[in-house]
Length: 254
Length: 301
Image: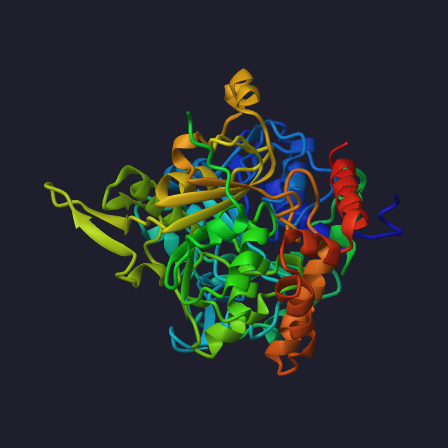
């Protein structure tokens, strides 16, 4: 595989960026829509973090043949070291682990995430989302990462209709971690300013401009002093992703 | 003589009364008691309250689509790879069902309290969200030093229903892979019924007791139900993604006002077949079973 010929996709760039953010020896886990988080954790294990622990909902440190979407699928347990159940996840959630991941239907300026409803009333929502499996584990973790499905003004809103998961506001609550560290969208990677907790543009995806990201966002973004392109993967990272972690190309579909 | 707990599907679905609270084991599209759900729909029991499960999909959507559900207390309802759950979404948005806003760890805590017979279980990590303002589920308790602690009220579902790979006639259960919430559910529910791919002998269970994941004391009845998780998976066969995709498309079409494909689905797979053997014929018989069993073996080889 020659990455100069067959360059990384947006999802591969997100997975590599996340993988580099995990430290060796940390404990991480994820819920549904698992492909990007799982790719990132597996890649980190195969590169700089062999002691990274995957405490999945189904199994500990599984070695699946491909990236799965749903961690409770029997495929997700392949070559796991232990079967974990939701009591293990409850303990992890109450005591806190290092990191967790969230997708969602809305995210706002302060990184608050909504997976429940948009518009209407509680009894009769305008749009009823799937709801969230796990949210407390995100907030009691040292940090969590958001990877919303698409970067549009309907997803990136000034204020979410329902707070399923607290974003940068976690920093102010005793017993919580730093909250959302990065938002990884199909257009950009964003973080949160220290003082205000407001979302701030840090990297753009290749070929995307700052103006395009702002136009796709429903509130005024803060900007880093220098907004750069997302760091490129090494040839070794891309080879491991494509040959070992994701041979079916789940991250190469867009 | 020790009493056998072997039962028929008709006997166990009769345990469910209108308005009962039901809790299904497994999660999303793995180890779901699908045969029980089909039999319950044929029986016609309605006004159900569904709780438990970190994630639900096809089975909940089908029960809602058949008008059997009054309320859900489910952390997540999704068709996963196949999109949102159309009947659930449509009924919620129309105000036809009540959908509580709760997360998985709250349900786990509520089951732990239910299992102990305690009124509450403490829980951390919901501060700052919009989830915790529902007094049906949450309270804040004050200790003698003035410390305040969020707590979830106990849940004890009327009937818990699991699909597992093996059980014996007395109710000893052996999961082959993931347990998800099943072990806690069996302890919290007033009655737990188990669908098993096959019945193994009590002697076999005694030879290797470490493999028993739920002891007989927690189990009310066992129904031998081969292929009974279909279209969801268990350790012995894969999820039938073609079936779930077709269901999701039919349900979405109905949500948009075109019910024909959904009605055809119900007739072909749920209301039409008299029982599970009829259902197994309707999905393509031995050929379909062989394909899904081999697919699971392939992914674990």
